Image (tube, rainbow, N blue to C red; front, side, top):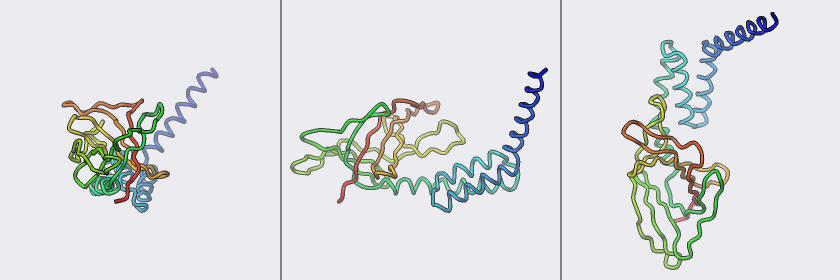
Length: 203
């Protein structure tokens, strides 16, 4: 009997929580959260939360407004991401979540120059400072794991997908391999992702 009462109680709590989660109050709460992200110029976060607001209820006014805001913010978020990456970077260390080691070559540094439309990878002679171009990758955003999720990752010519971002604490550039693009979509690496970390060079 006690087990039966407990089951009914847990089911009732679950139903109440589910209604609150799906209700207009929760949708409004998330809409306000998206506006805060936008106020702080966190465009990708704002776009993602506005999209979520639309998915909660795409048929009411709040959902329709959120969809318009999400769609308008996505290209801005991508542009802002690229702008934050532009510059000249020197490889500092390589590794994964299992650990990192300093990059050490007695002859050459590895230099990455990011422009508004391409990634340029160089070897730079430590003595002469001459740059030798190793490869160029056009800036192209990858497919998403789910169609409804907007991608802020980049796909290279070998179909490898890389996430780039700036560490807010040490200002280092991070380049992390997150999967591979295929004809059916993309794969996803969830552990042991290869990563490169760079420090910014002054011109």
